[in-house]
Image (cartoon, rainbow, N blue to C red):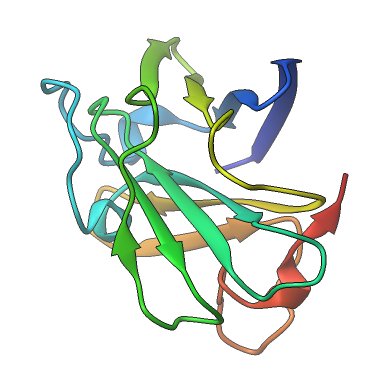
Length: 158
């Protein structure tokens, strides 16, 4: 894998529009087959793109979005660091669209959060599975020896 780019737009307050672009020799990666869009747990066990969003600047509570090239998704809420994970039904299911080129995989995600509290800190990451089944972990920053996307130090302020 050569690079991962993430673009974020918020065209309507509370609606996140993301584009993950994975630059790699795609023949060397395991990319999940397209399936019916639906909530699916444990997407992070294979190639998957993630976003973490704080609920408020003064709270440790946050959301986690997982989006797979399969177009399946998962959306959770946590009360604190790795604590009390619960699935969330957003106002509209996330829309996930895959575009594939010879050396680039793009995943476009639209997530409606207008009726859900969110503020300020955000983190983007990816889990990439190679053709041998090994996983690599990509993020803006890793703040602990092992990759931990949930770590509060992994987020940035928008």
